[in-house]
Image (cartoon, rainbow, N blue to C red):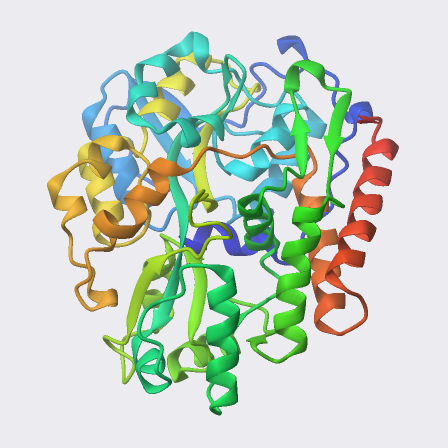
Length: 453
């Protein structure tokens, strides 16, 4: 859901994650130096049990922690909210640099994992029972938290992408079916504009993760990186697929067919409520976020539906993901086994998962939920009773193949965000932005000590 991902994509903090800062692989430099599990936000049920300090920001975390603590007598979660997204990451990075003060377990977005893995800040969970939960997740979800045979986090939720649209706008301007391809999307956008209607979507600069996902959907592979070979990375941001995607959205922006608003702002939400945008390219957590922001609660109630994400080639559909978080064990913990038990078991019980999806706090990745009749056949009120899990989101999640992220996601997102702003301001083309972005990221990687292939 959006609570997890907004802050990490807005005003990114550039973290120097170069090889000079990546040493300290032995536990002696950090093991056992985690912050003490005191001043817990939650109640400790079993006082004599081992305490594990957890940083996390899920909105229903209090209930999730209580569920875990009530079910375990040997280990108890001591939970605190250290910030949502970047504020938490900045505190974690400070603790890594100081070699003390990290939690035992930390909630991280999937696209941020590698940046901490390369610093030896996270524990491989494979020796601590990760295989026992492997069957609960799709191959794509598992790939996002793994490096080869090593598993650095336990998945909780994800963001399979789809196309949310206004049924009233589509009906008014004669769009009988949602676009199945991006060519159809552009044609529908022009049809609506020519008839005096609203913009069809939005190309906001502050959601570079969306643009990256759409680049991957087209066939781009921005990064190839293997933690087993820390010094080498392949960067490919000036390929034709990346250029095609940036040119596509740049041209829509130039023609006024899509907006240029930063998303998750007051103005953007007002536009969603008022029908300023005919579609919203988003993820499975969007209904919860939009409802919480006031969308679909007034005159716009019952006017939203969702369809599969448009494709470049309907004969070879590609599913992509935006968002998603997991629990990782930090290398500063004094008890890896206890911390791993928490990471693998927290937000994994039936009661917590049910609360998460029923309140639209998360889109769960656990296959026990995704295959359940209750989840599949749920009629989502925001989508006017549409069975979106069964028809849209679960198939998209199961088709997702996973992604490869760079060790410097924050810096990459910041530069992509700047390039999208330039495209929207008419200062560059999509193709030129791809080339400039590629050169920026290659240069940065080299300054951080990487050999770029």
